[in-house]
Length: 233
Image (tube, rainbow, N blue to C red; front, side):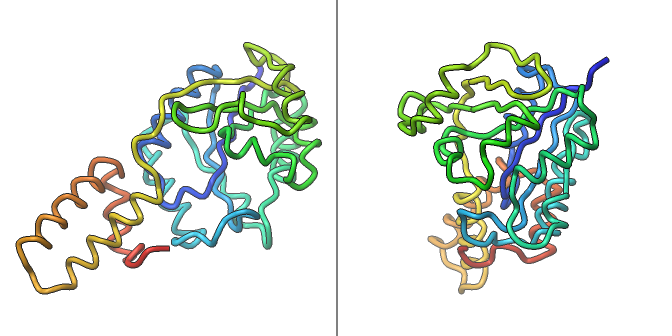
């Protein structure tokens, strides 16, 4: 049987249940055998993450420990300098062989800037691309770059080829983000460091509820042990 592999890139700073739920849906919709979370070390377009590469990899490993079809690919964390997706996909293609169906997954916001990525035209030489649209966020119809619009116009409904195809999928929006969770974690630490008051206690409880609802317990324990996100990043 031909292997079907998904590659889900990002910073995952920290990973949360929105990431996990979306990954499981994508496994089903794209008929994947395995989906790999591939955290980047140094993103070309973003600020430095609040957690180190090793810490983000450890959090991901904890989050997917009980999910057989979800794995972590640490290749970009082991690479010095910028994390270029095209380099990673070329390596992955060599490892899985010419017949494997490889799908690189990215959201519409990331896809809208794809033409600015390093050697972006070569990505489809090594993988297929799944563009994920979420309600309330940028739609594919709002993408104006001519080359990207041309790619979208050639979308397929089902990925069958080993590489070179683009599929568009619509998923439910996250109701949480890593940015919001970092803020909640920072607020909790700030409240803990103050003299107790009724207001601070209420803030603390609200933030703790958000954290525990959207971050796996094992990851929360790791964040606390590593003393991560004690100030906003």
